[in-house]
Image 1 (cartoon, one colour):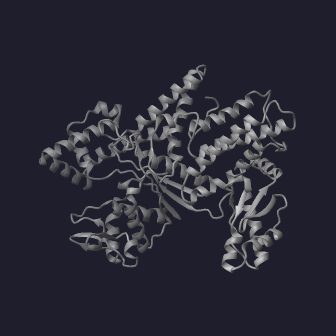
Image 2: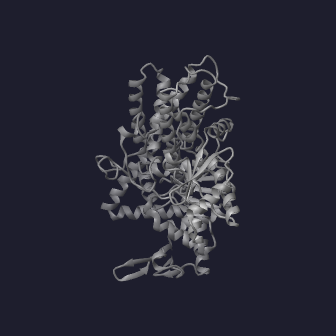
Image 3: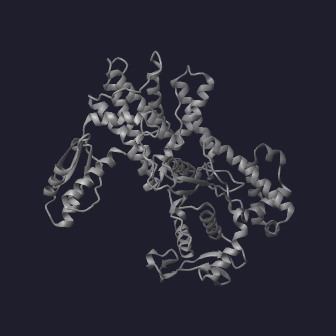
Length: 581
């Protein structure tokens, strides 16, 4: 149990003894350490409800509260309760944390099956910079949810079906360069698509041929099905290379095509149950009328007032849309995977789409604890959407390559004696880590500026700064005559800097569970930055190797715990730590 939770429990017991009934007793870390380590406004809230003096109630609560083995409590202002933790409590807690393989992070009270849908690029197209946020954010949330004890199923719902395949099929048969396809499939498929698309715009006859090829594919034509399958497999191979580099893994790759056989029956069911109706030949889902106009995703306000905003699930020509596939996907995930929650890590512009899908599923009886984990855009240093000079999307492979190249240059300058192979590996770890942390340190709902210099700096709010902090700690242990064994070491905390470091270390078990409350890995990123800053202050103020025993071993144990928390925390963000850099 975390220290914060233990204080909450003891506070709740004291409140119950004073007021005679159970009550919430929220405790939070103090905003200003001058007033204590933790604080609570529970007495003020209860006093307001009961129309009594908050300070008098707080005095009664403190008198009834057991603070043995924790520290002391005092009243501030009109009735805040501040808690000061004794350094011996920090020491004993840090010692326990060091011996705990979970580093003080508790398991959840309720284990859930969580399906996370993220990344989801289109087949036959390169991943671009816009895929960074979904891919990295989704992977981190999956790592954190798994560590917290949930059953996590990751699904890469790739776009492997649609009208673009008519053009690819026609181009495959007419202008494909097999040698280039074997060498690097994605660029060749992109070239084929672009050339055919340009031709189709100029010549309606080409567009008709493409449509005919798509119809043959949808009808199960053997030749077109073989081409489509090969196109999908080649695309997956190209995508897998990027995922391997990012250390991102998926349990499933169930693309849009996986659900093709389910779509017709789904639309029929919606018609039978009155969830959908025919409008101008198309089958649509309209408002149920149960929600207020401004809360209803199937209503939209225009100049003339509120009007229908239906979701089309079958077009008048019989074709299906993303909404149809997404409904079928929900049904599969709930019925086959028994999902308690389904998280969609998809950009903010898709907000209305998901509101409609979730509402339709609720009316359908398919409730999956839906969460649209939205995010903003990545901007260039001109604060516009990040593009190449020609106006194209910046390809993700180019971003990763440049990050690693820049990291290699910085490492070569800082550590010229590092062996070539090790320098290469460290450059990859630092470069990829920098890209990930630049994403995960942001509030996901905000846009952020992609800055190479800021991202790769050894000082500031960056992954290299955290990795360097870990490396600095490991260098201490390389100076020892033999391995350090922390078992049995008592942590003696006397200096302010070491007390503060221990204070932050034990908050790891409080920080990690809070991330999933609003799906915000930036809370962990910010915690790690604060921890690293505290370590550097500690290292400057408190000699480690030159200290006498038992202080020396105590300080080494604090270093060991800091190293473990930094490495583990970065690992939850999908970022590795080198031993040297």
